[in-house]
Image (tube, rainbow, N blue to C red; front, side, top):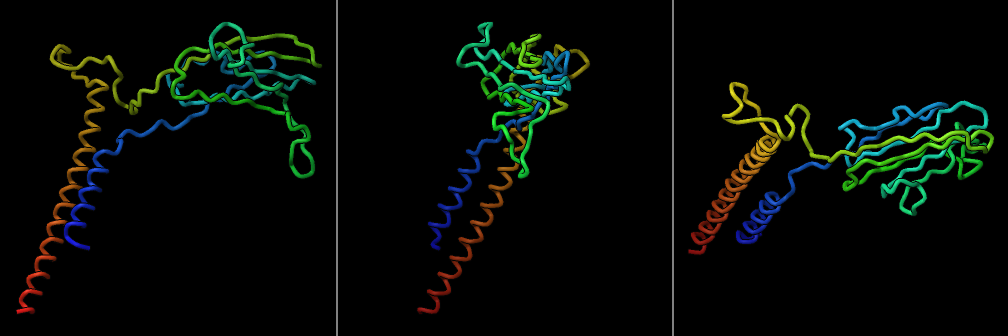
Amino acid sequence: MSRGVGSKALIGFLIVLLLSPSAAGHEQETLNVIIVEDEARPGNVTDSAFVEGNSVVFRMRDNTENASMRISIDNNQDGNFSSSSDNVSTWLTRTCELDENGSLVDEFCAVSYERIFNATSQGTYLYQVERKINQTLVETWRYNITVHPDVHTEPGQPSIGDCFGADCGDEVLVGADDGFEIGRENILIAVMIFAAFGTIMLALSIRKERHVVESDLLESE
């Protein structure tokens, strides 16, 4: 490989590294909501740890004979559950019959239902649980799910709005933006170290190629 091609390849690699996104994406977490004969556990989901990108799995655990339940989520927040954009589960049962191969006898039978909240789903959603006994609707419960924004705050870091600076007295607090800056500075330092290492390797490569050229010139003389 010629010196020019090697230099361009190394410079191109360093540019790609510098332009690469540094923030890690949020890993999806799942909250289990257990539906028993008289309530959902938990019913209202309000924990600030439940953020965009997470999911809820509703699990039917009512042991009442011939009981079934259906979950409906008011996605467009219009107060009803009949819109085409709303999430409505099948009627869930406590167990599903399996054949000798372990497959469902009834392909529509289900014991749980999952709703994934995407990265733009911040807000409060009303959901209802309908309960049937022997195919007769006997009661309906309604709860709320609050989806909080995913702000990518690392554990142990202060949240947005924390006081920092001279006006905070003796106690020095660092805001979430400062935490982000510190993380970005650490990444930049690592990139600079890597770039310096690459520069040294490039210089050694150029020096080696120069020695080879000089040797060839001496031999030709």
